Image (tube, rainbow, N blue to C red):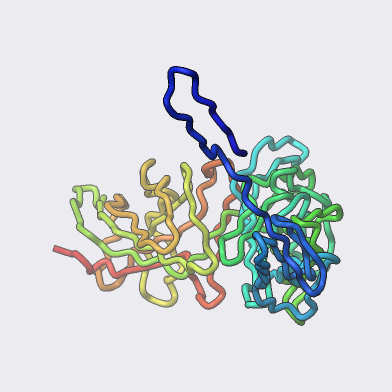
Length: 380
């Protein structure tokens, strides 16, 4: 705009100033079609052009490569995409706690369920809502009824657990899964608790993508996992050694101090914590074959309170130290007799979190719960 200032009679001059000049906005011609300055238009789903004062600039969207067998496309979108696709390698439940046990056997089990996926290049993670369904049931160990599903519950996940997203390569665990059951057996080694993972019936994946859950090829059972209702330890062998022989009284009573190492089969064992877990019996056994089954000076429990409540941590060395055993000396030469011990589950065992507890023997060992050593060991 041109602005003219006229001078007054006292002024000897006048001035002219240009306050502003409107810039020229040039249009663009693209493939014979005119576009105004600042106009944006699409050439196709992957190319967008802009007119900038007579200059046309076009940008082509780059797409990431997709590796799935059947990529999907949406109308108006540039890049193909893969459906959410996960393949389950293993489902591994563990019992975190057992509570609210009634006289009828009703109980509430709290589970942690780890899911391991096959993370190949063609597989994906997943996010969304109501993605998963986890069924749970009690399965008798008896082979005749191994396919029986007692107290079957179709969905034991809560809303948050069912919507838990999976990031490819990350650990994936459903924690604190609550499963109420009224079918717990009297002996925990009579049954397993089992779970089965499926795609949620009302799954809604992010971006409304299709979502597939599959098992390993030729292994449909990879979606199912079971664990014993027991906190279970498998004993390989029991090895007593004599640390010292303290005294022999005039009546023939003798006191020896033992160290008893217990070796477990870790692949079949779990961590055990609690009170009054163990019972260790001790006796003197004659070495002669015709008397080898005689138990002289048998004592049912030689562990003190702390020893009986000693925890087992899977993979760690486990030794009862300073075990005191007092018996009537049978007046045998020490090379004629052994001192023997036998390990059992404590009769009043109380497991941390009120879990169940069972001790089993290694099938490769003939007498894994019993160990003997010569009375000559440590004789002074």
